[in-house]
Image 1 (spheres, rainbow, N blue to C red):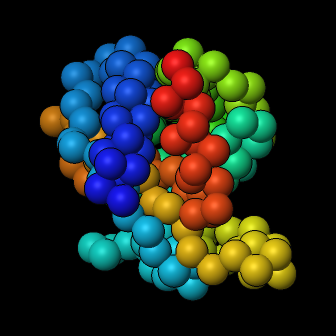
Image 2: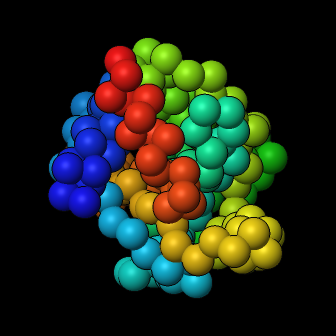
Length: 196
């Protein structure tokens, strides 16, 4: 199992490293990544991992299909989202609801991050990977509820979580990139990596 976890961490590092480089270009600010962690968690604990431990959070989410199957999430505290928007669109409306323009900027940020993440994995694993258009949500736990229910109906109970933190001095201090997949999908991912 340790070898499997190490392989998944390496996959996460490659995807997150590419995503961080793209985010750095997008923000015009240096972005670094933490060491990637990979853990198996009961599916019912996923909403807790998507919540905020230090205040409200906003997430950008997309479903992943093809050779990899799961969900990719960029998660940030609301105040960090505001700082990022100030860099991107020159606005910071404090506690006001996000405008359509701001939501569009965040969705494009998700598109850049997720496309970069999976472009790197496509090159590594040589498998087709598709993602849905990114969506923003303050309640990703509920947002993913349908996916979890579908998994339970198929007899699935555990998910593999691959997590990396993104850090930028100007805006991001605790933002996270998370990739979730059902544990049953992990052997296929490892086989793709070993066959490269």
